[in-house]
Length: 451
Image 1 (cartoon, one colour):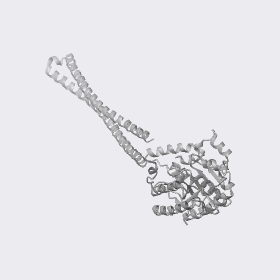
Image 2 (cartoon, rainbow, N blue to C red; image 1 turned 135 degrees about the horizontal axis):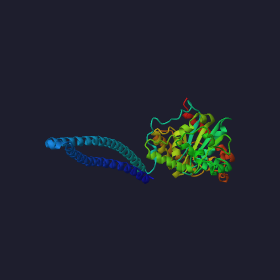
Image 3 (cartoon, rainbow, N blue to C red; image 1 turned 60 degrees about the vertical axis):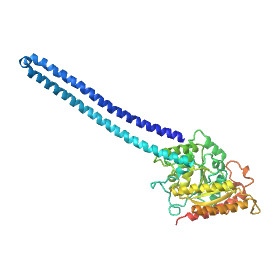
Image 4 (spheres, one colour; image 1 turned 90 degrees about the vertical axis):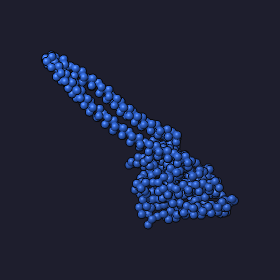
């Protein structure tokens, strides 16, 4: 992608330089034509001057006074030549002024293109040096960028991102079951919105009835770019009625709405990233803010939960920008715990760039084996290691990064669940654990409320 972008910009610069060379050639051509035409005008003037003796002979002056006739012929020739050259000089001068103005415009455009090319090369060099797109996301956000209203003072809806820059740690399990537990504890008219922003659509498969999901995501009559989470990262803001068309009901709870993900999300995100890399003022990190932080969402939902992909995509950055807090699920394994440090590092960089103000809710140990209320080996030792590591990260990143007291078990019946079924709705032990997790999440979220 980087090579293609470079070739494109270099070609654009060449296309700008070529007209400038052509303008120079036009100037030279005009001057050459001026010289040629001056010679032709002089010759014409001489011919006109040469006609004067013939005219004077006809009227008899030539025979009477040849010297006067010669002088008259010379004066007439010079005057006619001067008139013709003066007229043509003005015309050529006007063309030269127009050509000079065009050259100035081309030069200005060339300078602008050179500036854009230097800026693009800087972006490419930054990406190549970092070996990822992370540094590009961490560029400083402008003061004119939108910001979300304060939680507690301006709204009660709480936005949470569930993320970890590692796959297979249980992000979708936590997102889907926590949302169901929260919805179960809310009041009669309070709801939860689940947003699947991973193009693989695992959350969509997990919580939406299989028949409704299949009809919705495979129908040729449905524009998936407009009716799935792909729509949220598009530049055009949501129009009236667009949001409602994107919602599907959860299979396990009537109090949960779902925005599904489609495989097109990955391609759409890549195109938006290319535009952001190649266009200086093209901002793509704050698309969720006007679409989700609005009165209609605040009036309908108490919680909005984003199930994030295991990498820093356009959608993941937007979710962080829109969120109040984030949860990091992890398995009690060394490679999963190592990924937490990398995730915290990037979130800290993005926070310093004023892209997000989301605070850590904590780390959740997932797929833990317990017996008699105690950890089985080696989970107990690894859990203590995770808590020690969390304390070290808190000091490094100057944030309160704690481990949730409630861990989530590896349920033996989990693999038997079909599409549209969560563990919370079908496994009693899971319901008990996620109820406790929801209560702890609510308590931790209350710390971010501004009174």
